[in-house]
Length: 403
Image 1 (cartoon, rainbow, N blue to C red):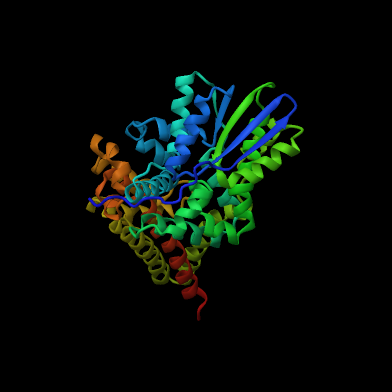
Image 2: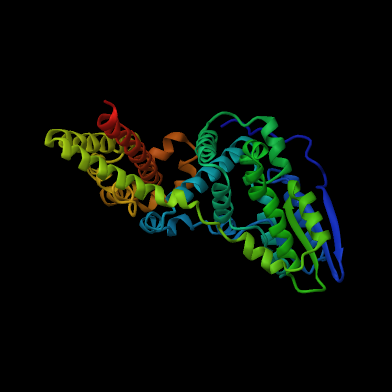
């Protein structure tokens, strides 16, 4: 293995801001999440003994991923599927794969400065506070605030870039030095979307400021955050908040989806059944043809999705059978059925969980590992079934009203 690239011209000291509010003093230390120097600087600051508490830019989920090496081994994959978290787990794995690529290319450990803060606080018996918003809530708020067409393009481009094996360029590394992994990953899209920028960056600045303002008075606090958050976080701390707890609660709330999106699947079901009824009213042969086309198109596309994921042959058959039925029942998706079948036919081994993080750094690893392959079966068969629903639906009404 060749010697990893080196990060040249690392700053000897990260940017910092001091904010004093009454008896509270906050020292905001801006770090680069891909810098060895940042990790050492964090350790030195904490060991100086100048602080009563330390706050870090992590949420509970990212803290667990950083400190609990066995977290993935404890994952109940079936429960993940039942709770509708398969897409979120896949996204987190993709983000982790991007971090691992950084580690391989530059010989560094992304998030090393956060780990250094955790370890130094434990050694000094200092309280540590997780001030960032949960990653799942952040991504859901981003998802809900952008239009549906942008959701598709953003997620597609995200996974394409994260799964790419191309060398990470110096320009991308410089972006990572200015912000965190989430911000840098979505940077290109956030610049073009005010809604995404607000949910991904500005809201988190407010959230972290509110968390800091909720601390007990009289503390001298070190806050370890990405350098890109310094400006916004400083402004919100200096301006203050009348009700920081209320701010946290409001920013933790995931707004409901649009009503028309909620009712759209049911409307499609009604229209499809109406199409079948109209077809049979005209002739039995036409009605049977419409039903057959619904089954073949919907089932075939879902089965193709499962096949692309290299699902078990019986899972592919399950996709073909289940998709035309589940598409007429919005309470259960084809992906849930196919992933459950794959899970039953190819139960993941202990080794699949233990090697999951390293396997997904390679495109082929997503298909090799039974855990990630099950997630792919879920995602791709769902996409196939969704495409089949619209294609078959348009074809049905084209035959009924196309002359």
